[in-house]
Image (cartoon, rainbow, N blue to C red):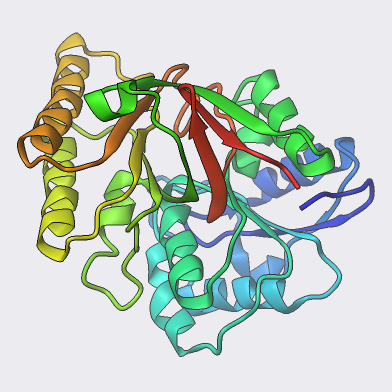
Length: 313
């Protein structure tokens, strides 16, 4: 998973578009951090100006072609999503028709990119995809300097990832230990995979969930949907890790409603006597956060002594 100075990054735009000004800033940022960069099909995949909504003006066939060319290209070491927003789900019908591509490079993205990460994991058996900050966030200082350092530390060194997590139920409080694959991502996007032929499989795994700008009521609905699948299919995860849901929430009532949804999740797990340890990210850095920290999807992960640990090989 490690890079060296001068390695090539393929920048892709599978969801909301980026502008020419974004491209200039992103390329300068990567150069400053000792990486070369390019955007395949740049003339077709970049808009002249910033768009007013999240819908992509770039045809999904072009976006898919850009992604596939980045996967196939033997020169680059990384595929890094320029931004999330909305629309990566549009690529999946075309990807389903593609032959399986073996993962041969690092893939970085989060939020809306969850749909692609689930597809890659379930259909193409990809592992070690980084759920972390995207290039527009980094280049325009929309995340902290510490966040920038953390993603490059992960890419260039053998630093392990370790995060403090707070136990929310009795099983988690009883010195719970597990070593299992971590799956998941953005809650609302993740739930859109259910009943598809690439539906996320979280049985006996560590299920990571986070989201932004969702009401407590919607979060409760998503949690209820996941629990019903667990019960109906008898496929519980070993543990659930709740990332950041509330750091960007300004209204007190909305924050209380989200906290209520989380407490109701714990109550329902207890009511149905499900053997699932539930934790919450203590520092609110996993997911949508100004202080976002990377976590590796599809990777063997340890939970021990209220720590989530991923050993960087």
